[in-house]
Length: 218
Length: 322
Image 1 (cartoon, rainbow over the protein chains, first blue to last red):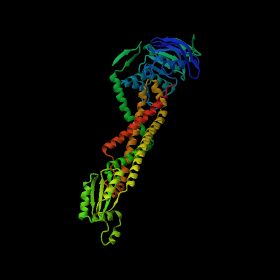
Image 2: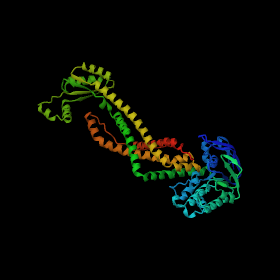
Image 3: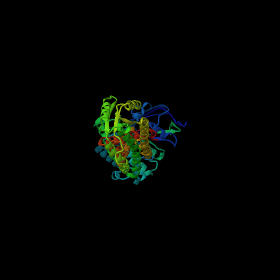
Image 4: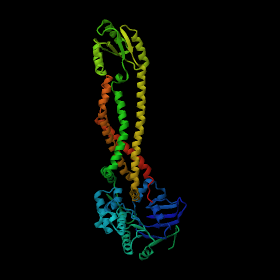
């Protein structure tokens, strides 16, 4: 599903973010990406959705080489990926429903289908009764779940989450992790970047560990 | 409506071409109304922008209308004064009749009109307001006049013609101010050039106004644009709402310009017609017709779309999620 082959990334500022990173995720696989802040977790995520390009080495997503992908093909690529951000990236001038519906509307699904899919996604994250609410009236955990609903509503084969439990208490974090596990059981490839090691220990899953931009044994 | 399994468990529905086309049309339909209502939410700001665009559009259009109507009207009467031939004999005399017929035979002459003493008096008193002064004379002091119009509009040719006519019998004096005519036509040419140059400048101004208004909107919606790009929105999808905003800004500006132009034309028409009558012209300022009004609105809308494209291209490209 997602393959990094000898990936090296240096930013224009000269900062080396990743060096010789190689790994491969199979469809339906569930992995944690761990490492201290600044180890390159976010850079790795950005490379996977073509927000950045690698300086050397190859990134392959669903068989496509992202280094050779022309800019106009990027939107199509991103529709295959669901991304959950630490800061949710919700649009605060739109209702919960409209936020979750965004990827479907962009892809051009008919309204009836949008409605049923958004409801299904919201019910999956336990927010069925909040579809008409505004994101600003929701708690941090609820906002995060809206973000997750938006990331999975178009049923992407790959789900990336960058510190999805960053601001949440342990109870909520566990709930959200179990949601991700459910998606993985449905066949979605899931990669979660986190530095919450307590949580990682509780869940039996493969672990990729970054240290100063290099992949090391945890 | 095919359900396809994409490498592994997850199912992602792929949309048919028809579905995509429908979605595209739906997005356009939806934006047509939603962008206008979004703009109307700040109606004070919208009105200001519309007025500015309206003013910028109406000035060159008004000047163009003026020029075009001067061009279309029987402009020989306004721009090319006739050669006035003052007669030494009364209008009914045989000398005068002979003169008229020999003038009419000249191929250089397009038209000969006789203004009798009585007609000259009537006209003079009507126009000059010297009616009382003329009344002081016991008899009509004005001579009969022939208004001669040349085929050529060239100053030099007309001057030659004037000399030729001057050699004929029964003529007291001839007046034709060639220098005046030439000066007027150069002035008109300058005004025409100025109008075109100003027109181009003002139209560029409209494009820039719309572009700048949209730049601020784009800046305010930076986060939204980033998020849309992150979840797979194409550049076209992101641009579309701004293009519609540009369309509405230009269209509304065109409507404002239409109102300003029509009311200016009505306001100007009376003095202009009075002036034209003093040149014996039936020149009249006409308000914009239905087709011209549509062209004006389309011009506004078109400039709006161009302005939005320019601005959106420049600013949206810079906004990338990070």
